[in-house]
Length: 445
Image (cartoon, rainbow, N blue to C red; front, side):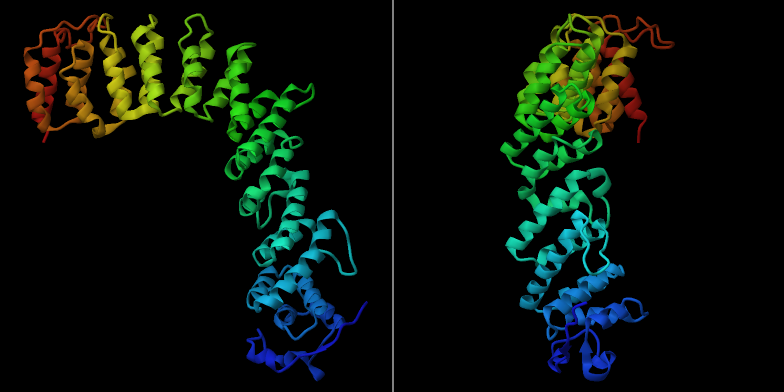
C-alpha cells in the first residue's frame, strides 16, 4: 500500500479544524496505515473527518480518509467535513473523491474495500453541489446511466432517482427519453412523469416516440402502462397517437387510450373527445371514457362541447352524464352553462334531477349562489325550478326576496312527480317548489 505522509501544520487550528491535533500522536502524522486503523476504532470516525478537513494534508490522504468514512457509513461526518473546508481545497477534494467513487458504479474494486454502488451513488449526489461544472456534468451523466440500467432496483437509497433527476434538471431529459426505450412498465410511468417535469418539447417528443415504438413491437410494452406513460410525457406526438387509437380499433384499446388522455388534459383534444362522447352509435364504454377525459379539461371549449351534448342528445342517461362532466370540469361556470342548456321540452323526474343534477351542484357550496339567483329569471322552467330548489338548500334568509316573485309562477313541471313521492304530489309547478323553499328558509336561523 502506498504510504503518504504529511505533518499537520499549526495553521490547521486557526483554519477551524474539526478536532484538536492531539489525536494524531507523536509527530502529528497521518498515514495510510493510520487511516485503515481508524476505520476499526471507536473514535476513528472523528479522526478521519479531521483528516478530511485538514487542508495541510496531501490530497491523496484526504481522499483516502474520505473514502474510509464512506466505507464505515459515516457519510454525514464526511459531508460536514467537506462543507467546512475552504472552497479551493474543497473543489480539489470533491473531484478526487468523485473520481474514486464513479468506478464503484461499474462494480470496479480498488486497493480499499469499495462501498456498494448504491452507497457510491448517494455520496456522489451529496457531493454534487461542490463539484466544478465539468466534473459535475460527468458525474451526472454516469449517475443517470447507472440508474437507468435498473431503475426499480437502483432508484432508492438516501437520495432517490427522482430527486437526482430533478436536481440535474433539463440536462437529464435526453437520458430519460432514451431510457424509455428499455425500462420496464413500472419504471416507464415514473420516467415519463420526470421527463415532463424537466424536459422541453423535443425531448418529450423523443420519449413519446420511444414509447410508441415499444407499443408497436410484438414483445414491447403492454398497452395500458404504455398509454399511461405516453399521457404522462405530455407530448403532442403522444396525444395524437392516443387520439388515433381512441377513434378506431378494439373497444378495450380505445377505452385505455381515452383513460390515458384523462391524465393529459389539453384543450386541443376537446373537439375529438366531444365527438366520441356525443357519438350516438359509439360503444357505451368508449363514450363513458370520452366523458371522463373531457371532465379533466377545465376550459370554455369543454363547457361548449358538453352543453351541446346536453341540449341535443336524445338519451337521458347521456345528458345526465354530460351534466356531471360539465360541473366536474368547469365548476361554477359550468353550472351556468348547464342550466342554459337543459332542454325545456323534455320531462324531468324529481328524483333524477335531485340525484343527477342538484347533487353535483350542491358540492360547489355557496360559490354557486350568484349563478342560481340569475337563473331564477331564465326562460327555461327546468332551470328556474333547479335554481329555486338549490337556493332553498344552500342559501339563507337573504334569498327570500329573490324567491318570492316565483310564488306566482304556475308553470307545470313536466314529469316531475312521475315517481309519486309521498307527500309531494301537489308540487307540480314552479310556484309550489318556491313555496317549499321559502318555508324552509323562513324556519332557518
